Image (cartoon, rainbow, N blue to C red; front, side, top):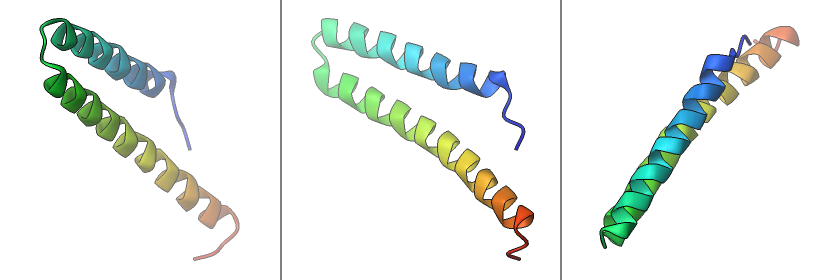
Length: 67
């Protein structure tokens, strides 16, 4: 499981961009769109983290020979 720093920066970058878009849309009075953008950003990060957890479980399985 070779998680590099780039992945952490990608997740942080997505969070920063989503926060900026959310703030801009909320200031423009489009709160419903702002919530949708936040939800989509959360789902994207959730899929990234789920992929890493899957890799972790595969590594654990291979270490303990549960194949």
